[in-house]
Image 1 (cartoon, rainbow, N blue to C red):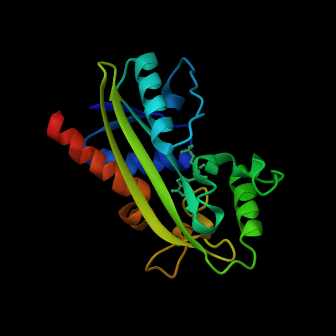
Image 2 (cartoon, protein in one colour):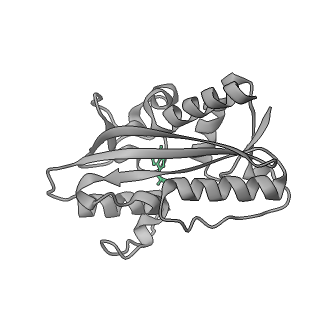
Length: 203
Ligand code: IMP
């Protein structure tokens, strides 16, 4: 089975391939599509954004699609960055941050600035994945990964907020884990495995 994973994020795509290929699923990405089409993520929840992306890409490309909306929720920040995780540096909440190297680094800089001197560092990653096929069949799954925000970035692996997220039960950040270790415990790994189990029942 060929599925279009509706992302251009290289870090995410790599993880989706590692998670889906063992089930015999061939993964295409938006970069493989000749005709370019972009869906705006303008909803208030991860699920609504994932449904919107999955439906619109499935209709446009006439392919079965898996779309994800994911992010980091920090307890003391009332769940922010949440659905704004990818562009946290650029939203008014907590002041904007200039992008010097990369958006990921600007996001981390802002998060650490807001968390300076804060003792409650509890956070979780959330992933909502939606499968949608052009014949209007859809499935949904969700995964969480609980942890804490570290005082400083550590590690080179993963992407996004991985260098400042220490999963529960680990002395390392997500960016210090191997890809296999991350996939085993990550929000995305849990959500995708649940989704594949559901897909296997109906296909
Ligand atoms: P999305 O592409 O709208 O789902 O944005 C997700 C954003 O949340 C990314 O740009 C990252 O900043 C963050 N994020 C999601 N999943 C992860 C992860 O596994 N590690 C680190 N950051 C993540």
